[in-house]
Length: 181
Image (cartoon, rainbow, N blue to C red; front, side, top):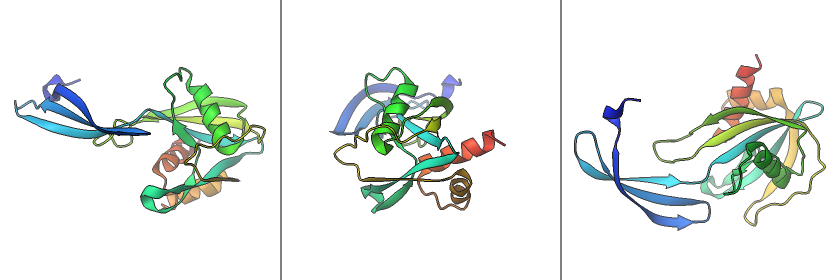
């Protein structure tokens, strides 16, 4: 790592906190010696699940997203809990809670920082195989979700056409499509 570009954090405070995220203000010293403030959104890491059923379809969800005032089509995902030491267990929990599906096996796909200029978010992507609707859904109080299935080809085609607007989901689908070629 090139330390000549690193900023020095002089102080850090939370300016705003709400369920799900915080807005943090860091007092920093830039490499030039200039002291300034930097604000960013801090949130727990998340897991994004690309769940395949036993017959090869993908379990997808429709979920209302208030920030963009529309129904979002994509993959199940959720924030890690403070006691989540096992990423696969967290992925199983999120899949079951949001969709009612249990996963047979889970394998890691990738880890990304989707917007590291504004957020400290980390998304862990996994692929779940042999998913079956045998779990009990347990939606959070602020989740409105409909579950359905689609073919992977249809999902990939939507991502390629720019019709899969959920960036987390599009990245998972395209990453998987590239690794499976």
